[in-house]
Picture (cartoon, rainbow, N blue to C red):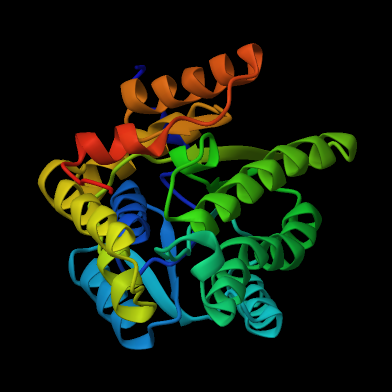
Amino acid sequence: MQVGAARERFSHGVAVVTGAAAGIGEGLARHLATLGMTVVVADVDTERARTVADDIVAGGGRAEPHTVDVADPESVEAMAAAVFDRHGSVELLVNNAGVETAGLMWEIDRERWRRLMQINVDGVFYCLRSFVPRMIAAGTPSCIANLSSVGGLNSVAVQSPYIVSKHAVLAMTECLHQDLSIVNAPIQVSAVIPHSIRSEIFRSAQREAPTANATANAVFAAMQRDNAEKGLDPLVAAEHMIEQIARGEFWIHSDDEMCIAAARHRGRQLLELDPPSDPRDMLTRMGISVE
């Protein structure tokens, strides 16, 4: 990898990162600040967003917290208006906010399904709807990076809402890339495909939307364990992904080997018209038995 593209491209300007108060978003916000960008730490958790922003500032960076619920279009519009009124442009928009949920599809609580889609899918659309026209009007070279997932390339049992949402985000990102090409906007679009980056997403899902399904609980417990033990440090992953974005790439990976393998697996499945993988193989690798 050519080193230094990020330090040159993102040494100035404004970055808006949603879901920036924890996990991947926090890692991205902190790394972008070290490069020299002014980072808007946007999150529904006001206190945590302020803590992250204050810590960045204390370390010599530039950051400001902004409370936003990406599921609320008025909240997103107010944030976009405030950021552009204050700074005049946004050079990097990272749509990262997202949540998980466990359970068999037909057992998912309807309100949880709706809330997850509002955050993971509608939230990305609302940000694009509010920021893109302003970014086009500003006329400065900029970039939009939407976070999908390896789950946006393939399918996985007992987490259907999340998988569906990440397939939708990937499709939205590809369509955005094409739409912006039509109007010749100087806006790069990147699809971020993280693999396993340390966060509390699985534990949060079990806390906020518990399921009575034993298999789903076992899978999420195993995924949280593996995430904690083997997941990439958010700052390390952020550095790797931001470098790829700075180089102008569309497909952005946290772990090149794992993410490319997932893409090739999906490609083979479609070429051969194979059915989805047998989930019992995954459960066996996790040490989970199913009667």
